[in-house]
Image (cartoon, rainbow, N blue to C red; front, side, top):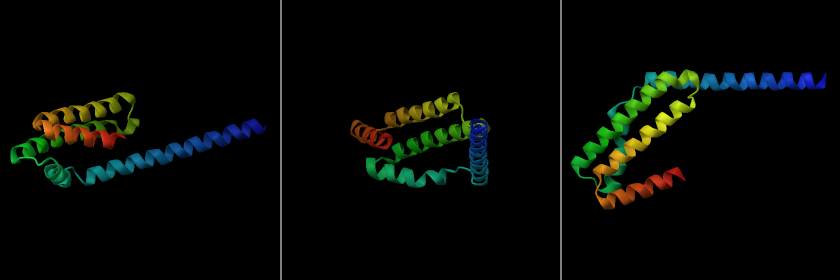
Length: 126
């Protein structure tokens, strides 16, 4: 009897945790739809990169294009996958898109800026 009650409690806790997780996903999806991603949302990040790496106007424009495309692709991936709790293949696609954007940004930077960018990425991933 005790094991049946214990397993029933475990099942109820798992179901409750699942409901909380799903409600968070739905809330996140509703918020992201109500606030579409715009180029303005990149502003603070681009400004920080421009001042940190002393980007030229051309570099700033190219980095902005790379990040805009990355965010568009990630948004499409998340939009199509949020119901499935981001399975491994979706997480891998998101990770791959981040790495692709990193490579493209590095291609825009000069060698000194590349070293700074690599250090920033390394610090962010730690």
